Length: 545
Image 1 (cartoon, rainbow, N blue to C red):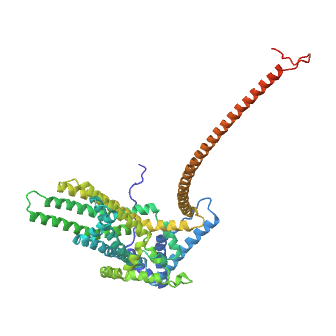
Image 2 (cartoon, helix red, strand yellow):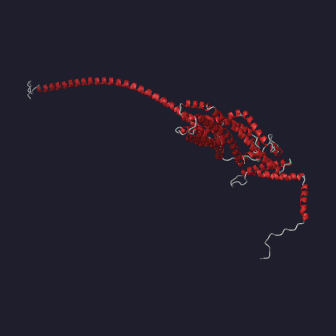
């Protein structure tokens, strides 16, 4: 409408000779780059890559308005240390001929190798648990004999109590074996993973950054409980198959021999899934834990570059231990990855023997006591509930269904408690001990002291009360004797006094009578004198009244 085309503008005409010569020009330019320039170019690209990798481990520079100058200084110091790590690592990698692509390939290789290591270590760690399940199936007396001892000591022969004792003993045997295998797993993973280094081999700035990345304890407990539910998945398969095979073993019309065979097949299938499925479930738990650590940045390629030398260096640029780890990840080819993982599994199997004593010692740790104790206590309750709920059920299929349903729910709770306490049990105990030991937290000490004082006071008061009762009893007895004696003496006294009173009363009465007679005689004598009084004429005449 305005005479101007709205279409795509035409491209400028470029001579064919110029187009053909452009690749040659670029080639000449590339040839003109010196080795020093290429190295500097690689250094810059690697630096940018590592800088982005370490960004999540820097502290945020945006602080609250009330932050002090010291707070800002700490943030700046932390971030400057991260910058120094990045710069020194990029410098060495470029000087060794590395470029961005080779660094990426090496780190991808490291991730793959760590996955292989996780599978291998989890596999080895699950073997003792599986062997215990098989041993208990082949020799039930391993559980029944100790359980009977417990119920005998408790003075009960209740079937529910026996079931609870068997659940307690069976689960304790399993978790003790698992505890020892855990020691071997820890030994295997100690400084054998590329993306997760021991704390003592990392620079302090990285240790601090990783602590900031740790989730809250409640979250850690929830994650630990959730990761153990791989065993619940195993139990769904095992219990479902057990219910099905139990129904087949109790079909009407089966001969006794066929029923015995079917029952044995059901029991063998159950123990097979328990043991083999337990190993696979443990491997699943191990990989869930690995993925959680990667998601929380607790397992990352940055830890390769954050390693410090065993022999401290004044200049961070002189460190080489981290580069040896980097080369180990790089030099493991795709063909040798499987053998590398198998080698680690073999080392772990050998480590299991050497770490047995360490595993036994670890049974007394807070983590072990809380995790193993909680696990066994829950399983003891589950076994008791299974026995109580199925005691009155006569139908074999219904009995198996109820038994397996209770086991499924109870096992989920038991493994959840085991995972939660395994994740935070030791940390809770350590923090409680640290809190208790600090001088500015005297409340727990006072509580313990007051409890001791209260106990001593109670013992003292009890002793005093006992002594008082004994004293009062003795006094009451003596008082009773005394009162009896006094009562007797008083009776004698009263009798004597009463007699004396009577004598005195008699004497008084006699005296009064004598006085009355004397007074009467005196009056009569007086009257007689008045009558015989001399007459006025001097005659001794009598006056007549």
